[in-house]
Length: 266
Image (cartoon, rainbow, N blue to C red; front, side, top):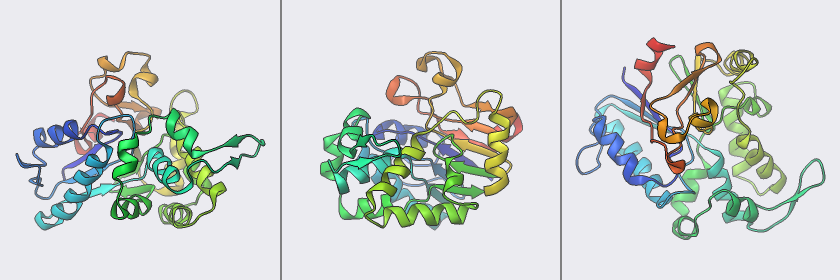
């Protein structure tokens, strides 16, 4: 079965459509042409780039079209979706963390590439879709997540529990819980270095799957290379975790990765 994944599009709508077209997943008009293929988009649709809402519109449309041909488009929540929703809902309301430090979504949004044009164009339909996105998913032997973190385990011991907890946060107005969700999804680097294998095994042991695919951490930050030199995804944790964020907003490529082919390289 053909499985594809892309992450951290960050407003680069045209690059996303070009990559999907090159892979045969959409036609010249941008409509689904991938037959029974599966496409996963692992979050961070907005911020940093020119057309975050355009990216959301592409994914929402393909989610509707793909099942008619026997295909599937899955979409996950990234930390920038929490940031965009938090900015919309709470603006400059102050929250204190466990150490007593004060924070506000307005400040974090500005520091992390928030685009006023995205906020202005978010409709009630967009906001409802974003708030309902799952945080993690399983597809065959793959565990799909946005962030390379074990913080997901603080929200539950199964895919269903994690997603239910995240959904309860995004359905409510508990600013502290929202901030904890944002903070958790911004953590990273769990799968690199000496502890990477243990972290990956802890996540798959609880949530299932044989291997993890994630975005969030730019591959160049994991390798020490320039983003422009990134040529493909990066296996970590002894072949248990696959990083696919090429760092498009930082000058790297937008990677559309074929997961069924990567399995043979693990």
